[in-house]
Length: 241
Image 1: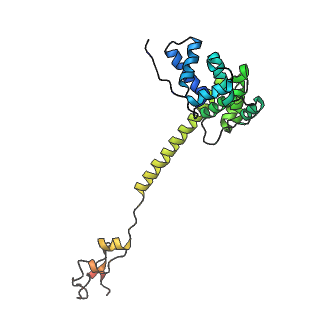
Image 2 (image 1 turned 180 degrees about the horizontal axis):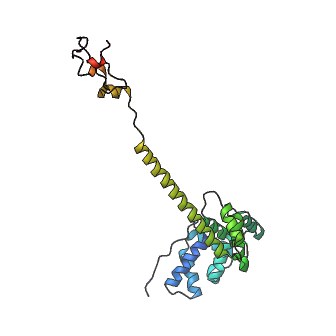
Image 3 (image 1 turned 180 degrees about the vertical axis):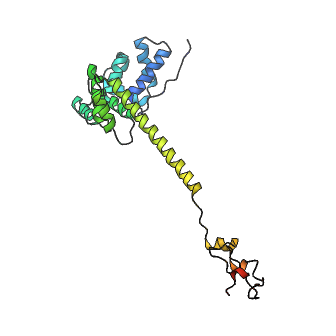
């Protein structure tokens, strides 16, 4: 029979429950249903350190005399003792959405905190209540409180839709501000600085030689003879006499 997947030695950095979940997936993929075979596979691949831990916890009983489920529970109780239900519920009911945290991220944390709360059939109602109370957004909270017959699925749908709409509105407003700034920059009149005017020959004052808008030393009539006073350097229309 073909073998699918790969069995790794248990690494202390990995959660024991997660390791067993991966092991169960391997069993399912390879159609391994026999309980004794599951136990023997676990004991052979878990690694020397984990096998020694199992052996020490069962001493003087040998590990291969226990069932797969017994060994899994034995290690789980040792590595991850169940926390107090009261403390777990306190943490769940104290959790509020943090600044910058998404609605779905907040709900994912609530589900994680509810693991040892033993809410059972009331879990959906508790998640709904915690979402409404801890959403930390006045607009979303008012909308949820105004909804009749609100269940958890509906509360999550409304909260995520309003969050998405608010984010989209911010993007549109930011884009509009950026576009207006670019338009204003293009239409903004450019200043002409003295050194630029001098370089171009344009002056802010009237030329005393001919009346044009340029510097007198750049005037093409600076050598012209005035028909009025016969002096050189200006036209008759600008003659001081």
